[in-house]
Length: 81
Image (cartoon, rainbow, N blue to C red; front, side, top):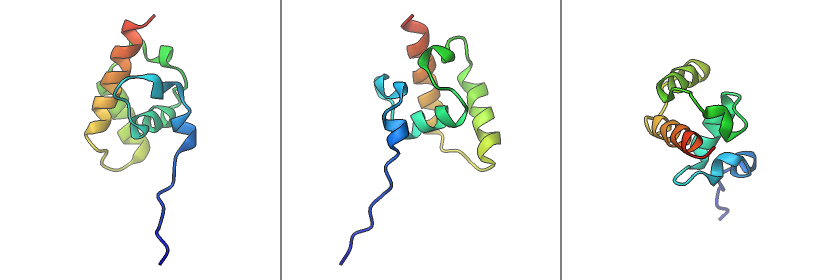
C-alpha cells in the first residue's frame, strides 16, 4: 500500500523567514505570497494589515495562527537591524 506524501514547500523552507525563531513554513509561505522576500521589508509594517491583505489575496478564511506568524516576523525584523 502506497502512502500519500504531503508536498514540501522547498521555496518557503529556504526563505530568509525560516531563520526567525518559531516561524513555520505556513507563515513563511504567507509572507512570500504577499510579495515580501526579505525580513527587512517587514520593518514598520502592521501585522493586522498584513493579515487583511493576505485574507483578500486568499479570498477565503485564513487560519488565525497566520496572524501570529506575521507578529513574530515583524517583531523580529524590528529588533534585528
